[in-house]
Image (cartoon, rainbow, N blue to C red; front, top):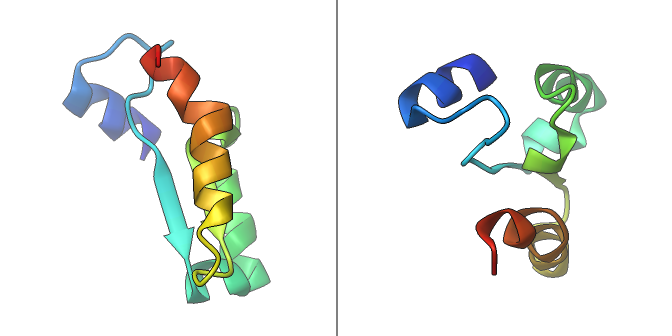
Length: 73
């Protein structure tokens, strides 16, 4: 996933212009959650496992803490 994203964006390896959000069954099942985090080893700040989709706060907080600084905002 990461290699393909970097090739598509034609970005240096130090920059990852993507943020992945996984939700619902993909993250409530422990097996899937562990597998997803394995895919993103080393760039954990670019993935969010959003368990409670009714609660928007985790998305906002993750963006503010990890993504906004990368955008220079």
